[in-house]
Image (tube, rainbow, N blue to C red; front, top):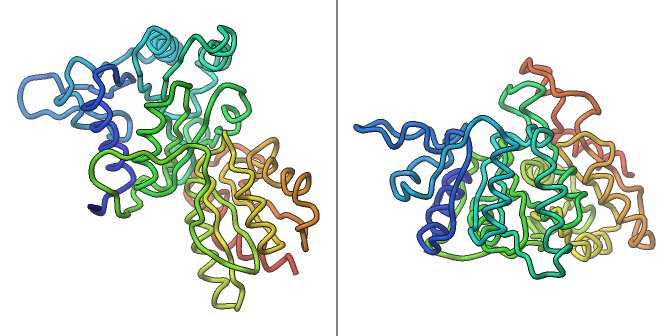
Length: 333
Protein backbone atom coordinates (compact mmCIF):
# COMPACT_ATOMS: atom_id res chain seq x y z
CA UNK A 1 0.00 0.00 0.00
CA UNK A 2 1.33 3.45 -0.90
CA UNK A 3 1.16 6.80 0.86
CA UNK A 4 2.24 10.21 -0.33
CA UNK A 5 5.60 11.28 1.10
CA UNK A 6 8.22 13.86 0.25
CA UNK A 7 11.49 12.56 -1.15
CA UNK A 8 13.17 13.65 2.10
CA UNK A 9 10.70 11.61 4.17
CA UNK A 10 11.19 8.61 1.89
CA UNK A 11 14.94 8.71 2.58
CA UNK A 12 14.28 8.83 6.32
CA UNK A 13 11.88 5.90 6.05
CA UNK A 14 14.40 3.85 4.08
CA UNK A 15 16.98 4.35 6.82
CA UNK A 16 14.47 3.24 9.46
CA UNK A 17 13.63 0.11 7.45
CA UNK A 18 17.27 -0.77 6.81
CA UNK A 19 18.35 -0.29 10.43
CA UNK A 20 15.37 -2.22 11.74
CA UNK A 21 16.07 -5.14 9.43
CA UNK A 22 19.85 -5.37 9.87
CA UNK A 23 21.77 -4.63 13.09
CA UNK A 24 24.97 -4.17 11.05
CA UNK A 25 23.62 -0.97 9.46
CA UNK A 26 25.00 2.11 11.21
CA UNK A 27 24.60 5.81 10.43
CA UNK A 28 27.42 8.26 10.96
CA UNK A 29 27.95 11.88 10.04
CA UNK A 30 28.12 15.44 11.25
CA UNK A 31 25.10 16.35 13.43
CA UNK A 32 23.08 13.30 12.39
CA UNK A 33 22.21 13.09 16.11
CA UNK A 34 23.20 16.58 17.32
CA UNK A 35 21.19 16.90 20.52
CA UNK A 36 18.88 13.93 20.24
CA UNK A 37 20.48 12.09 23.15
CA UNK A 38 19.88 14.91 25.61
CA UNK A 39 17.14 14.76 28.21
CA UNK A 40 13.78 16.34 27.47
CA UNK A 41 11.92 17.05 24.27
CA UNK A 42 14.80 18.41 22.22
CA UNK A 43 14.94 16.56 18.92
CA UNK A 44 18.12 15.86 17.05
CA UNK A 45 19.24 17.99 14.13
CA UNK A 46 19.12 15.02 11.79
CA UNK A 47 21.94 16.31 9.63
CA UNK A 48 22.23 19.62 7.85
CA UNK A 49 18.80 19.25 6.21
CA UNK A 50 17.10 17.20 8.93
CA UNK A 51 16.80 14.04 6.85
CA UNK A 52 17.86 11.66 9.64
CA UNK A 53 15.69 13.16 12.38
CA UNK A 54 14.18 10.52 14.66
CA UNK A 55 16.77 7.85 13.99
CA UNK A 56 18.96 8.34 17.07
CA UNK A 57 15.97 7.85 19.34
CA UNK A 58 15.08 4.60 17.55
CA UNK A 59 18.67 3.33 17.28
CA UNK A 60 20.70 5.18 19.94
CA UNK A 61 23.75 2.90 19.67
CA UNK A 62 23.97 3.01 15.87
CA UNK A 63 23.56 6.71 15.03
CA UNK A 64 26.93 8.33 15.57
CA UNK A 65 27.91 11.98 15.42
CA UNK A 66 31.40 12.59 14.04
CA UNK A 67 33.70 15.58 14.26
CA UNK A 68 33.65 18.13 11.45
CA UNK A 69 36.43 16.24 9.71
CA UNK A 70 35.28 14.60 6.48
CA UNK A 71 38.50 12.66 5.95
CA UNK A 72 38.01 11.03 9.34
CA UNK A 73 34.32 10.40 8.62
CA UNK A 74 34.92 8.63 5.31
CA UNK A 75 38.03 6.83 6.52
CA UNK A 76 36.09 5.46 9.48
CA UNK A 77 33.19 4.46 7.23
CA UNK A 78 35.44 2.60 4.79
CA UNK A 79 37.12 0.75 7.65
CA UNK A 80 33.78 -0.15 9.19
CA UNK A 81 32.53 -1.50 5.85
CA UNK A 82 35.69 -3.51 5.27
CA UNK A 83 35.36 -5.18 8.68
CA UNK A 84 31.75 -6.31 8.38
CA UNK A 85 29.37 -3.42 9.10
CA UNK A 86 27.12 -1.66 6.59
CA UNK A 87 27.77 2.02 7.30
CA UNK A 88 25.73 4.86 5.86
CA UNK A 89 27.92 7.95 5.94
CA UNK A 90 26.31 11.35 5.49
CA UNK A 91 28.63 13.75 3.69
CA UNK A 92 26.72 17.02 4.25
CA UNK A 93 27.34 18.43 0.77
CA UNK A 94 28.99 16.77 -2.21
CA UNK A 95 31.15 19.89 -2.44
CA UNK A 96 33.19 18.43 0.45
CA UNK A 97 34.30 15.47 -1.66
CA UNK A 98 37.66 17.17 -2.17
CA UNK A 99 38.37 16.96 1.57
CA UNK A 100 37.84 13.19 1.72
CA UNK A 101 38.35 11.79 -1.77
CA UNK A 102 41.22 9.43 -0.98
CA UNK A 103 39.17 6.95 1.14
CA UNK A 104 36.71 6.66 -1.75
CA UNK A 105 39.11 6.88 -4.70
CA UNK A 106 41.97 4.71 -3.44
CA UNK A 107 40.40 2.54 -0.75
CA UNK A 108 36.65 1.87 -1.06
CA UNK A 109 36.72 1.71 -4.86
CA UNK A 110 39.80 -0.53 -5.05
CA UNK A 111 39.73 -2.99 -2.15
CA UNK A 112 37.40 -5.60 -3.66
CA UNK A 113 39.35 -5.61 -6.93
CA UNK A 114 42.77 -5.71 -5.27
CA UNK A 115 41.76 -8.64 -3.04
CA UNK A 116 40.37 -10.66 -5.93
CA UNK A 117 36.76 -10.27 -4.84
CA UNK A 118 37.37 -11.60 -1.33
CA UNK A 119 36.90 -8.20 0.32
CA UNK A 120 33.57 -6.39 0.54
CA UNK A 121 33.00 -2.68 1.07
CA UNK A 122 29.24 -2.29 1.66
CA UNK A 123 29.42 1.47 2.17
CA UNK A 124 26.73 4.00 1.27
CA UNK A 125 27.68 7.67 1.12
CA UNK A 126 24.63 9.95 1.20
CA UNK A 127 25.31 13.46 0.01
CA UNK A 128 23.38 16.55 -1.15
CA UNK A 129 23.90 17.94 -4.63
CA UNK A 130 22.72 20.89 -6.66
CA UNK A 131 21.80 24.55 -6.44
CA UNK A 132 18.54 26.35 -5.76
CA UNK A 133 18.84 27.05 -2.03
CA UNK A 134 21.23 30.03 -2.18
CA UNK A 135 23.96 28.02 -0.53
CA UNK A 136 26.64 29.75 -2.63
CA UNK A 137 29.58 28.39 -4.60
CA UNK A 138 30.98 25.96 -2.01
CA UNK A 139 27.69 24.23 -1.09
CA UNK A 140 25.72 24.13 -4.38
CA UNK A 141 27.72 22.12 -6.87
CA UNK A 142 26.72 18.92 -8.67
CA UNK A 143 29.90 16.87 -8.54
CA UNK A 144 28.46 13.42 -9.19
CA UNK A 145 30.56 13.28 -12.35
CA UNK A 146 33.65 12.87 -10.17
CA UNK A 147 32.47 9.72 -8.39
CA UNK A 148 30.85 8.40 -11.58
CA UNK A 149 34.28 8.45 -13.23
CA UNK A 150 35.90 6.25 -10.55
CA UNK A 151 35.90 2.51 -11.35
CA UNK A 152 34.65 0.52 -8.38
CA UNK A 153 32.17 3.12 -7.16
CA UNK A 154 28.47 3.22 -7.96
CA UNK A 155 26.73 6.59 -8.17
CA UNK A 156 22.95 7.04 -8.17
CA UNK A 157 20.55 10.00 -8.01
CA UNK A 158 16.80 9.41 -7.60
CA UNK A 159 14.15 11.85 -8.80
CA UNK A 160 11.02 10.50 -7.08
CA UNK A 161 10.21 9.58 -3.47
CA UNK A 162 9.42 5.95 -4.35
CA UNK A 163 12.75 5.55 -6.13
CA UNK A 164 14.61 7.31 -3.31
CA UNK A 165 13.38 4.79 -0.74
CA UNK A 166 13.87 1.71 -2.91
CA UNK A 167 17.25 2.78 -4.28
CA UNK A 168 18.60 3.69 -0.84
CA UNK A 169 17.63 0.27 0.50
CA UNK A 170 19.30 -1.35 -2.52
CA UNK A 171 22.42 0.78 -1.99
CA UNK A 172 22.72 -0.11 1.69
CA UNK A 173 22.45 -3.82 0.87
CA UNK A 174 24.93 -3.68 -2.00
CA UNK A 175 28.34 -5.19 -1.23
CA UNK A 176 30.01 -2.41 -3.20
CA UNK A 177 30.42 1.26 -2.26
CA UNK A 178 27.56 3.46 -3.49
CA UNK A 179 27.43 7.25 -3.61
CA UNK A 180 23.77 8.16 -3.11
CA UNK A 181 23.12 11.71 -4.33
CA UNK A 182 20.17 13.64 -2.91
CA UNK A 183 19.38 16.55 -5.23
CA UNK A 184 18.33 19.50 -3.08
CA UNK A 185 15.88 20.61 -5.74
CA UNK A 186 13.68 17.53 -5.28
CA UNK A 187 13.78 16.90 -1.52
CA UNK A 188 10.33 18.47 -1.18
CA UNK A 189 8.80 16.66 -4.17
CA UNK A 190 5.85 14.53 -3.11
CA UNK A 191 4.79 11.17 -4.51
CA UNK A 192 3.33 7.78 -3.67
CA UNK A 193 5.73 5.56 -1.73
CA UNK A 194 5.01 1.89 -0.99
CA UNK A 195 4.97 0.86 2.64
CA UNK A 196 7.40 -1.66 4.04
CA UNK A 197 10.58 -3.05 2.57
CA UNK A 198 11.33 -3.03 -1.16
CA UNK A 199 14.28 -2.33 -3.42
CA UNK A 200 14.69 -0.52 -6.73
CA UNK A 201 17.59 -2.07 -8.67
CA UNK A 202 20.63 0.11 -9.28
CA UNK A 203 21.78 0.57 -12.86
CA UNK A 204 18.31 0.63 -14.42
CA UNK A 205 16.80 3.81 -15.91
CA UNK A 206 13.08 4.56 -15.76
CA UNK A 207 10.76 5.93 -18.43
CA UNK A 208 9.09 8.91 -16.79
CA UNK A 209 6.96 9.85 -19.81
CA UNK A 210 6.38 8.28 -23.20
CA UNK A 211 6.75 10.30 -26.40
CA UNK A 212 7.60 9.95 -30.06
CA UNK A 213 9.32 13.10 -31.40
CA UNK A 214 12.25 13.84 -29.06
CA UNK A 215 13.90 12.20 -26.04
CA UNK A 216 14.66 14.26 -22.94
CA UNK A 217 17.16 12.59 -20.61
CA UNK A 218 17.50 13.83 -17.04
CA UNK A 219 18.72 12.86 -13.56
CA UNK A 220 17.57 14.00 -10.15
CA UNK A 221 16.12 17.52 -10.31
CA UNK A 222 16.49 17.74 -14.09
CA UNK A 223 13.94 14.95 -14.59
CA UNK A 224 11.31 17.36 -13.31
CA UNK A 225 12.64 20.12 -15.56
CA UNK A 226 12.32 17.72 -18.48
CA UNK A 227 8.77 16.75 -17.52
CA UNK A 228 7.77 20.42 -17.27
CA UNK A 229 9.35 21.07 -20.66
CA UNK A 230 7.51 18.07 -22.14
CA UNK A 231 4.19 19.51 -20.98
CA UNK A 232 4.98 22.84 -22.67
CA UNK A 233 6.10 21.12 -25.87
CA UNK A 234 2.92 19.07 -25.96
CA UNK A 235 1.02 22.32 -26.37
CA UNK A 236 3.14 23.00 -29.45
CA UNK A 237 2.39 19.60 -30.97
CA UNK A 238 5.75 18.04 -30.01
CA UNK A 239 5.66 14.68 -28.24
CA UNK A 240 8.59 14.43 -25.82
CA UNK A 241 9.70 11.23 -24.11
CA UNK A 242 11.42 11.65 -20.72
CA UNK A 243 14.01 9.15 -19.48
CA UNK A 244 15.11 9.26 -15.83
CA UNK A 245 18.65 7.88 -15.65
CA UNK A 246 18.40 7.18 -11.87
CA UNK A 247 21.82 5.53 -11.95
CA UNK A 248 24.93 7.24 -13.34
CA UNK A 249 27.26 4.30 -12.69
CA UNK A 250 26.31 1.73 -13.76
CA UNK A 251 24.69 3.63 -16.61
CA UNK A 252 21.72 2.08 -18.42
CA UNK A 253 23.16 2.59 -21.89
CA UNK A 254 20.58 0.36 -23.55
CA UNK A 255 17.70 2.50 -22.23
CA UNK A 256 19.33 5.64 -23.62
CA UNK A 257 19.88 4.05 -27.01
CA UNK A 258 16.35 2.63 -27.04
CA UNK A 259 14.71 6.02 -26.55
CA UNK A 260 17.06 7.59 -29.10
CA UNK A 261 16.18 4.91 -31.65
CA UNK A 262 12.50 5.57 -31.00
CA UNK A 263 12.55 9.36 -31.46
CA UNK A 264 15.71 10.14 -33.47
CA UNK A 265 16.45 13.26 -31.38
CA UNK A 266 17.84 13.62 -27.88
CA UNK A 267 18.39 16.43 -25.38
CA UNK A 268 20.19 15.63 -22.13
CA UNK A 269 19.61 17.92 -19.14
CA UNK A 270 22.25 18.10 -16.41
CA UNK A 271 22.44 20.44 -13.42
CA UNK A 272 26.24 20.19 -13.43
CA UNK A 273 28.66 22.26 -15.48
CA UNK A 274 29.26 21.06 -19.05
CA UNK A 275 32.91 20.00 -19.22
CA UNK A 276 33.63 16.29 -18.58
CA UNK A 277 30.14 15.75 -17.19
CA UNK A 278 27.23 13.30 -17.42
CA UNK A 279 25.62 15.29 -20.23
CA UNK A 280 28.79 14.99 -22.29
CA UNK A 281 29.04 11.29 -21.49
CA UNK A 282 25.47 10.63 -22.66
CA UNK A 283 26.00 12.70 -25.79
CA UNK A 284 29.18 10.78 -26.59
CA UNK A 285 27.36 7.48 -26.13
CA UNK A 286 24.66 8.57 -28.59
CA UNK A 287 27.25 9.47 -31.21
CA UNK A 288 29.45 6.44 -30.57
CA UNK A 289 26.77 3.72 -30.46
CA UNK A 290 23.63 5.46 -31.69
CA UNK A 291 24.85 7.51 -34.65
CA UNK A 292 22.60 5.72 -37.11
CA UNK A 293 19.55 6.62 -34.98
CA UNK A 294 20.25 10.37 -34.98
CA UNK A 295 18.07 12.64 -37.10
CA UNK A 296 19.40 15.77 -35.38
CA UNK A 297 22.47 16.63 -33.31
CA UNK A 298 22.43 15.73 -29.62
CA UNK A 299 21.85 18.84 -27.49
CA UNK A 300 23.09 19.38 -23.94
CA UNK A 301 21.32 21.67 -21.49
CA UNK A 302 23.59 22.34 -18.51
CA UNK A 303 24.65 25.04 -16.11
CA UNK A 304 27.36 27.39 -17.45
CA UNK A 305 30.99 26.56 -16.73
CA UNK A 306 31.26 28.94 -13.77
CA UNK A 307 30.99 28.70 -9.98
CA UNK A 308 27.45 28.82 -8.60
CA UNK A 309 26.41 32.41 -7.79
CA UNK A 310 24.87 33.29 -4.42
CA UNK A 311 22.33 35.99 -5.32
CA UNK A 312 18.94 34.40 -6.02
CA UNK A 313 18.39 36.18 -9.33
CA UNK A 314 21.82 35.03 -10.55
CA UNK A 315 21.40 31.50 -9.21
CA UNK A 316 18.03 31.21 -10.98
CA UNK A 317 19.64 32.35 -14.22
CA UNK A 318 22.59 29.98 -13.71
CA UNK A 319 20.54 26.79 -13.19
CA UNK A 320 19.14 25.03 -16.25
CA UNK A 321 15.38 25.37 -16.53
CA UNK A 322 12.41 23.85 -18.31
CA UNK A 323 12.40 26.84 -20.64
CA UNK A 324 16.04 26.13 -21.55
CA UNK A 325 15.01 22.58 -22.47
CA UNK A 326 12.12 23.88 -24.58
CA UNK A 327 14.44 26.23 -26.44
CA UNK A 328 16.92 23.40 -27.07
CA UNK A 329 14.17 21.23 -28.56
CA UNK A 330 12.93 24.10 -30.72
CA UNK A 331 16.48 24.52 -32.01
CA UNK A 332 16.66 20.94 -33.24
CA UNK A 333 14.54 21.54 -36.31
